[in-house]
Length: 46
Image (tube, rainbow, N blue to C red; front, side, top):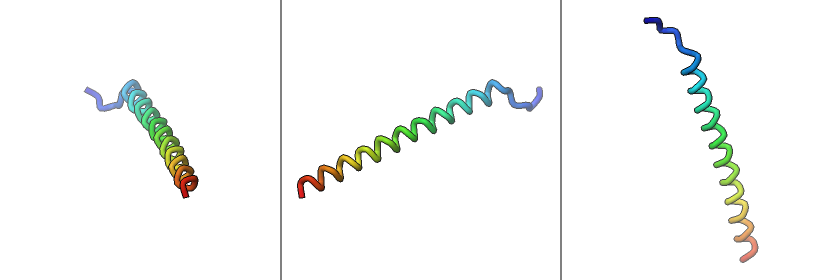
């Protein structure tokens, strides 16, 4: 049995990682949008 990493496994890990990165970016975008809307509402009520 060889301990050489299979390219298939590496590919799978990379795909998972890039999907996760994309998800984080979407979360960050949503978060900044939410905080932006919140501050807008706060400034309107004052």
